[in-house]
Image (cartoon, rainbow, N blue to C red; front, side, top):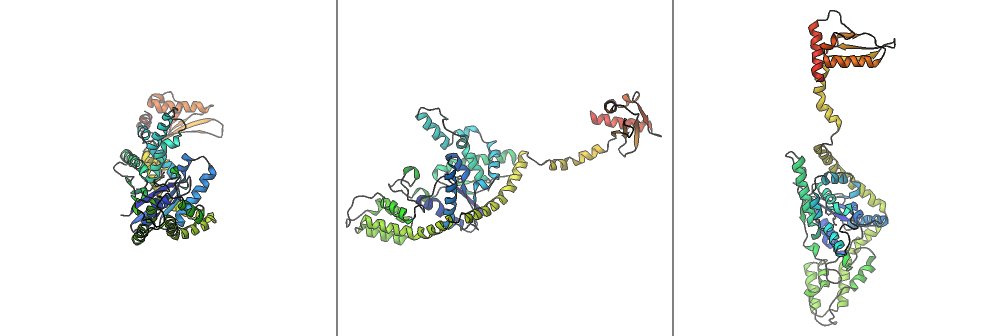
Length: 434
Ligand code: TRP
């Protein structure tokens, strides 16, 4: 069976070298493996949780889309889309919201972190916390479950969200599946490498530490400038360096073959100057990133090409999402009335086998009713009424009281009508009304 691998990137900024090494590159490599179906998307609904600057959202989703493509994603093979182009995702989010316990959401790290920060600052616990932030794990569960992903590559901080997705999937399957498993239970896949790329100061490369090396933004110049700021020890040119205690070397490793790694280490031990080492590192990275950057700039100059790719991606994604959502809607009871009618048809038929009262108005302006048998033959014919309401009242009484109302009713029996047939017809109507 094919394995579905799915991951999303929240579109609030641009990507750095750590995102490339930790997320993009392994995802793209994995997407080429046989037996794997990949789903990669711009999590732009998630972006709205963190960011209320429309221009920034717009720029970021374009930049991140261009980055995936420039980095070598085969968009014919993978399903590559914007979350916000898939209306089935917010629909599924609601179905899942209705089976998610609030207590579990109270325990989500992102929400708890925000509450803790508020308490530490002496604020109301929920100050500044939106329902978007609070419910965010449910939206993420919908992202994953909508496509029945088996594996979800994420950073460590996201593992709890995958567990929540499993829980809600299980609950939904249990409540509505009637033995069917609508949802696959996804597994988090935390790449060891994902944690690995250090930033300028040696801590994990992250925007929040302000220690990042940009991937494409700012061109080769920005790459060179960032590399120049990598912190090293103060050993002079000619002094032997310890490669294994230097995060500059770890960054080099992420772009080098084993032979290149060994050669670089040997040079450092032999006294290579840090300035020279930074030049080697730049060359090493730029030999791989440079051609991608050229593609990136070309794409950014033609956003309509990216739009077209994403529209094709959305079509592919919706071809999977829409049929599943239709089943889920059905499972929870949101069913087209057409289907109900089809089910009810035999009952309607049985009903039409009953005798029938019919009220009508004649050319004389007066009101009448008649009773016909199931086969359409006439049983009773009323006199004329001045008011339609009177006719209606007699029909109601005959239906309710049957033969008991017959004695006083202003009606004539059809010629040759057997009394037993008339009484049976009235009894059938009475039983139906009861
Ligand atoms: N929340 C993830 C992050 O901040 C991004 C994301 C959104 C995601 N939906 C997803 C990742 C679904 C994996 C699967 O990194």
